[in-house]
Length: 263
Figure 1 (cartoon, rainbow, N blue to C red):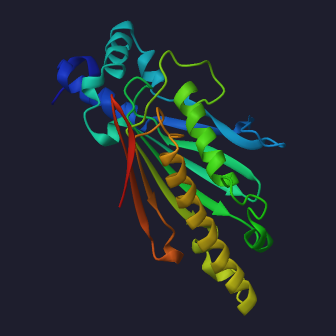
Figure 2 (tube, rainbow, N blue to C red):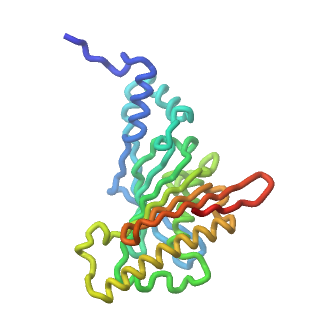
Figure 3 (spheres, helix red, strand yellow):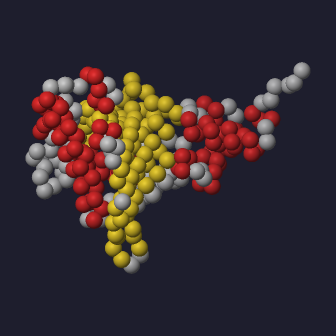
């Protein structure tokens, strides 16, 4: 009868593979301890972001014995073990319900010292009246959605995933930001208003909101607003607009200003 194999009976290389897999998937969020965080970016009324508390379930494995804790700690902070893009990417779900944002992390496989990419799945859920009057008062200045995204990016770069925590020893300069934008009615299209006027307002509102976001990001790139935060931005548009995609690369060198390459 074959003897069961324990974790400590495996070679170190296999144990490291187990630890890496655990880092990638074993974390959860606790919505019962959701807290509010205020984003101030010059607006008279701060934007409220609800942030769920992050729980790293792999800590339970780390507490089994001292050797496992030492091995996991070494591996977690060793950049050479986070070789693939997926292992270097923080992923989050950001939801906008009219005037309130909710941020929920879905994948945190590496520490801030090893992260290189940020992926945000951005769900927008606005009432019909909101679509019809969105950002009417923000002509010739950045829209509120872009300003919120920019401030969130700044907070994450300075403080990590718990955006109100202590300041990181070194701010994160992300190599890429991947932003996937979609609208709540695309999930349950049968529940959307079907009148001609409603369909026109909904379609017009989506196009204006999405094009405004692209315009704000391009303008911010040219004005060096994104400098020291991210080097390239990839934006996937909503299905209802034909799933457009825009890639913006910000090229910097030591002796000249940044250039923008848009595809």
